[in-house]
Amino acid sequence: MTELTTNLWFDHQAEEAATFYVSLFEDGRITLIDHYGSAGPLPDGTVKTVSFELANHRLIALNGGAGDTFNDAVSLMIRCGTQDEVDRLWERLTADGGQAGPCGWLKDRFGLSWQIVPELLFTLVHDDDEAKAQAVMAAMLRMGKIDSAALQAAYDAS
Image: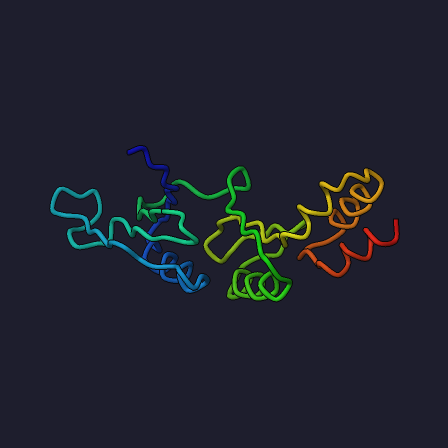
């Protein structure tokens, strides 16, 4: 069976990050914590990897040591069913040192980029009425956290 797993490189916060991420999702869970042995490269007993699942997606957090950092070239997108879900995730992910960005993007306190997007955005920007779809896109481009009511208002006004 072929399987795709997202691997996230951390300096030393793999377990802390995975624990935080699984707390965001009702079905989030840690499935395995593995430790370095005497062969290293980090000290024997140090957490090496934390395998976890978010919304049926498998990820591994690796304590790989300093040197590599996250950037916006890769992000995790969460398609939210409600504005309440957008608000809750945005608040949790930007707390404690996270940073809000434009157009539904943010960085969490570990530097990982996320896109928190209401499902409504995808519905409205793919509308057959090109003027309405473009009005929604223009509204979204002016936002930080995406606001479903504002998207709907832009759609209705065009």
